[in-house]
Length: 221
Image 1: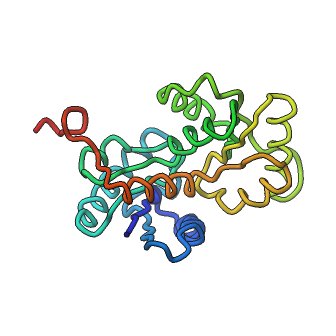
Image 2: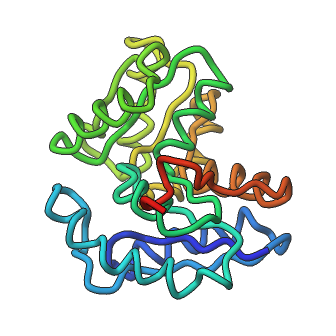
Image 3: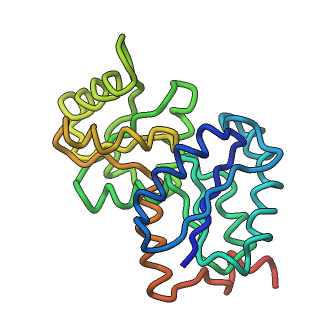
């Protein structure tokens, strides 16, 4: 089994972080191919960024069409997810969608910790598009002084104590290295979307499931 993980931006640093998380989860059970998107911006923040990433993401899916058993879009806003599902019959998962659905199975309520205030409205609208509002209680950003882990743990505690979150979702693929330590400190599931998507994709491939081409993703054929 080979699962291709697409980093929609062109950042080599973030691609390395995603690759480390993916390989740690795969643990030799299957192959993971983790790729940055050629021609994409270094970060995916705006609608224009998503549009600029689309050609490169499409090219990866076409190149690996016969080599991959599934694809993962490793950006929490799930950019161009529907486009890639139209291009391939292989399962294509977004880490945002995967983390929301798994969070709802692990607790009755979840919060998202996002990297910055600018992306908060996009996260809320994405949650609405997946009809997960009944489980969503808040979105927060890291705050205060200290190192990265300390700041995110502080935000996670506020999600739990002030908002009632039972599960915490890390709202960026670049935060994947924080999930394990935050889970141990906070005592609730802290979800890295990369691992969430990989776990679902692995199951889909084992079950022989593919994307339906009957209507929505049929490309008009």
